[in-house]
Image (cartoon, rainbow, N blue to C red; front, side, top):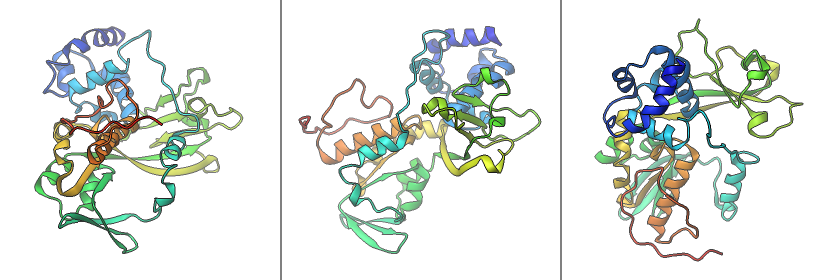
Amino acid sequence: MLRELLRFYREAPAHADIAQDISLDDYLDSRGYGSAFREDHLYPMAAAIWSTPAADVGNHPAASFIRFCDNHGLLKLAGRPIWRTVDGGSREYVKRLTAGFGDQILLGHGVRSIRRVAGFVEIVDTHGTTRRFDHVIIASHADQALRMLIDADGEERDLLGCFRYSRNEAVLHSDPRLMPKRRRTWSSWNYLANTKCETKSLAVTYWMNRLQSIPDRLPLFVTLNPPSQPREELVKHREIYEHPLFDRSAMSAQRQLWSLQGNRNTWFCGAYFGAGFHEDGLQAGLAVAEALGGVRRPWRVKDESGRIHIHELPPVRELAAA
């Protein structure tokens, strides 16, 4: 397996262009890669990154998979980039992003329906209240957006309907039995394989003490789809999450998603515009805000929309940094 791992790391980046229209499984078959390399290294690694069953990783388009791994330094044995985490977790940047308008956020008011009527947008919430707006930005999963749109047109149904999602149970707990048996092999991300179980579900444990610099006196782990349940007295919280599956249909739809923007005063953004991560949702949201508001963000970074497929944007006015 090690020989094939080194070969994949060495040759795959040069094949991204010629593997444009085939699946990862097809690419690996064409290059003669064996099952041990796939099932014991490549697919578990990808499954942990995308929170998707390892059995589905082979359906991912080969070109985008290779480019993602190459861009994130995953095809190196040495000199890999250092991954950073946000102090305090994602709630910290959510709190800062919403600091200027937090009092306008209606918590507990889910959206029951969205209808576009005569130049405005009509939204009905789960309490039965109807509100009208000039525009709506739907920052959700693609399938959730489609369910909210009771008057979705053919293009919206075709593109948003291409995205499937995997359902994952996340358990916050303190049970070390869902970590590797040998403590010295503990990592930030730990893929759990059960050879006696035929389930397709992803199983991975995140070591939160290391990821969030939490003192070890309180061991904290998050396990997705635990193959065996942690002891109940050590369970802190359970949550259900859904993560996008990037098969050939979804990746093809991504290249056309931007054509939906602004039609009937409706805009879309979310992690499904890119590789399924928070950064992808952020880039899509910023691009939508600029296109709708006609004002640029007051900062510049290299390749600021490079994680998403985006068409030519209309001219926007520069906003001076405060």
